[in-house]
Every structure is written in C-alpha cells, then in structure tokens.
Length: 229
Ligand code: BEZ
Image (tube, rainbow, N blue to C red; front, side):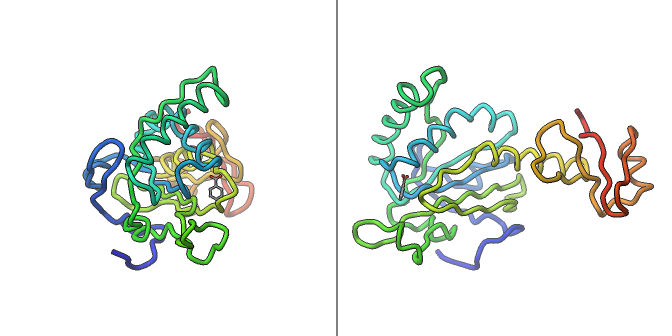
C-alpha cells in the first residue's frame, strides 16, 4: 500500500480502518467535511497523552470549523481503548481539572503499519523513535485535508516535541478564509487581524472584492480588513 510521496495538492489516499469508533472507509467517513489525520508515536507515552487530551478538549473548535479529526498510531484497538482512560483521567484530574477531557474522536488501530506507511508517517531514519524491536514508531505527523480530499498542510514533528493544536486551528482558519475570499494571511496572523490581498488579484478586482478598501504598502503587498469580520 505504499505509493508516491504525499505533497500539498495530493489527494489524501483512501483506506479502510478499524478505529475506536468502529470500522471506517476514510473518504466516506470524511464526507464533505474538512479533515485532520494526525499520528502519534505510541500509546502510553507522556507527550502523546498530553496531545490527545488537548485535541479532545479542542473538539468544539474543530466542529465549529467543520473539521473531523482522527488519530492514528501503530497500536491495536485494545491498547487505544485502555490508553483513552489514562488520557481522560490525566486531563480531568491533573492537567485541566476545570475543563472536560473526553476523547470522543476516533483513533485508528494500525498495528501492522499499513495506513501509516501509506501516509508516510514512519521515519525509519530517526533512531530515537523506534520500538523495542527496532521498528519505527509513527512520527508526529499532521495532514489537513479539504472537502475535495486535497492535502492542504503536512507537518512532521519529532517525538520529543508536542505539537501546538492552536497553530493547527490557525492554519485551518487561514485556509478556509483564503478559499472563500482570495486573501492570504501574514506572519503570526490570527482571527480578526488584517489580511493580505492575494497576489493574483488585480487592484481593480480588489476594489470590487473589498469595498471597505485596501492599503498598498508595496506594489506586491496590499492589506485589507479581514472579510466577514
Ligand atoms: C512521548 O510521547 O512522550 C514520546 C513518544 C515516543 C518517543 C519519545 C517521547
């Protein structure tokens, strides 16, 4: 099941999987939603426990944006199900006692590494990220997939560094805004900040698209208020 390297613009490969929420066909499960598939090195490991708890607490934020989230690692269902109890307990009792941590998104059981191979989530070169048999763990990969099943973001983080899911939500916001309004977003942009008029839009078109106006700082750098705000 391995193939060409997945890139921005590639179609996210389809697959069948067993998950903590039952069997799925990935594309069917995505439907017309945006999707995030993210891998963690292994169940019952500390950084991963904090990451999956955070994704659970951010579930309303993903839903607000029409994004379905699914996790994956090279562990079986029994392991995922037992570990979810730890994630919820750690979140509810220790790290975020005032928020609810309830892992309700599916986690794919990929003990045979078929899907993680398909998605290039294994790093055989990283000797710090292998199991007791020397087989590579999944790395911390994230794919953001749009409703046409096109991969719009890929990131790979090393095992020792937990990801920022605030950053992943920020990217979703930027992609969704850009798709709708022909804008791009500058460094450190966040919701409500000014945006950049897409370089492919002429000044004449920009006058029509952004009736509140835009500022031309440089011939190629024009900013405008965030549309729809
Ligand atoms: C962790 O989640 O803490 C972790 C997993 C694999 C290697 C190193 C750290």
